[in-house]
Length: 416
Image 1 (tube, rainbow, N blue to C red):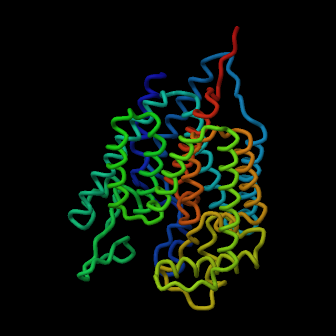
Image 2: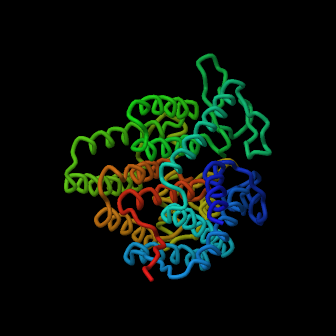
Image 3: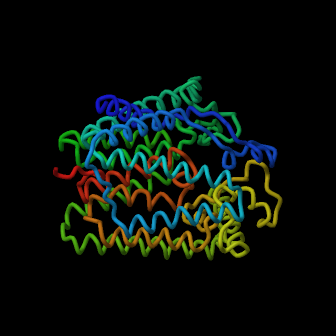
């Protein structure tokens, strides 16, 4: 059975970016005219595979006697308080079904974390699978870039897009033409870029020195095709951090840098939360995001204890002076603000406490690069919170973090 579990879990790690999904819940999906995916229930083909792996894994664990679950109480306590708060807030103020969907997604992310930390597959094998999965996405994205549209592979979860399709991520060229950004099998270019960035930096320490530059060049090309400015900025920041930690190996120095970054992120986001209304920028996309920040601030002022998970887009029309167009109903593009709005001030405090305890007690320095990528990406977008692939990426980063900083199997066998 262990061989089957290994093969199936490896397959999952390879195909989880494939956005093959079906709608099964949509009461408010067309409330504003256009389809609203943020309040729609989907089931993904890769999550069905993950469910099968989990069932087989549990059966295997029950067959093997004298196993006990080891957990770290403080972190787990904060984590579960955070999830419980999110569900209760959603049950009271939002849509209970969407709250249950959120809890299910978190549980699925925990499954991925447990499978990784249980050592079902060796870390180097996991890295190999992720790397080749990423190479497929890069080649897929390059083909989309070349023909300037989707390849027609909807049966593999590819989105339908082209230069004239509304709502598609694209670049305005100097001659007036439009160039679509690479999607791969993802629902958006930004998610593809984040996936490539995370896989690259999780893999770097396992690559032979002579091949590192080659892999960096390949993944940089893939991120360029996706043309995510956030991923580019975060990539430069994290690369600098990577070399900084490689040069200074003092645990105290590394921990100090980590805590300082968390404090700076909190302070910087708080400043933008308070002052987005006063910032004037000509770039239309940035201005739209600043306007979302203002809506987020206004919503929190009215609902300090949260509006419920996935309910941001259903409430945002009440906190904007101008009437929103159908395509403007999007979650605020800042995960910290979205957590604040949907789970309340108590939810954000629990989340930040979780981060501070994590860095203070369990961090070993350079091995936390994956966590920094997540922290740096969060102010630029929302998919790490409200997309299925985003939560899977968080789970993979968490699994690597535990394995690299505190190598152990979550389930350990006792001596007879």
